[in-house]
Length: 287
Image (cartoon, rainbow, N blue to C red; front, side):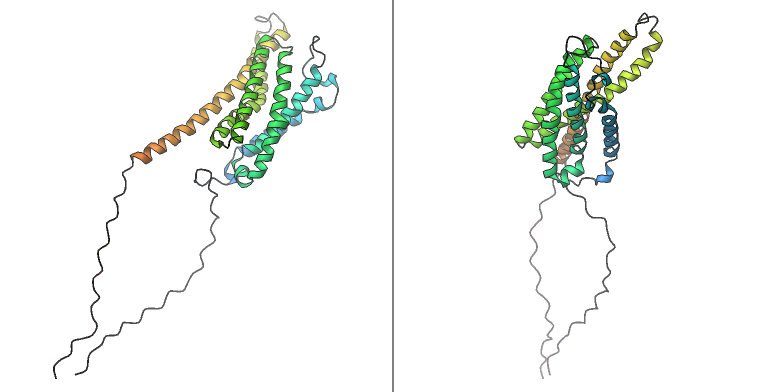
């Protein structure tokens, strides 16, 4: 008797391939390895840039006209170069405001790191440092009283200190520390906007007390509003920046604790040896 053999069944034909639908390109990973949102998902960047450009467009013209009569701050009699120093402070401060809008934009920072470094040098060397030094001089010579003088001097020192600390951290390639100091520098850079808002609101709120508390002295009321607005203008943004930084640190600490407390997955066991394949040849029968 001949041997019986088995033959495998033919495999079914593969299904026709379908072209996958076009999907949105993956998001670029950030420094921590997590995907960053795309540029249009940062809704605060565009309004911030619009506000900064509008503020510069309103504040800059009187100080590039070279006409001291157009200055919005009266020059004190004891400091003749006040207008020159104030004009330089406004020009360099405008450079700092406009460049920092790009520096804090995560999409720009991640996609164009070389441009981020170049704009950062302009922000530090062509914006904050000269504007801070001029602001220190102008703050000492302010005609609005001792309260705003103390605020301006302390603001200029903190602005210079935070910016220099962030720049030195970047030079050491300590980018986490660099980011923290530059968030504080950004808050102090933009505090001029909140300063003006607080001062205008305080003047309106204190106006009913002009005849009683201030005895009809409008200059005294303006000095009071300027002093309070000066302190609130940079203290509140700096506190908000610190809260934002600590909030992010707390989230990272919580993620690390959750990762360490998560039960570890069991180690995979060694695979069992494969069973021998059954023979397809039937045993030969005796004739």
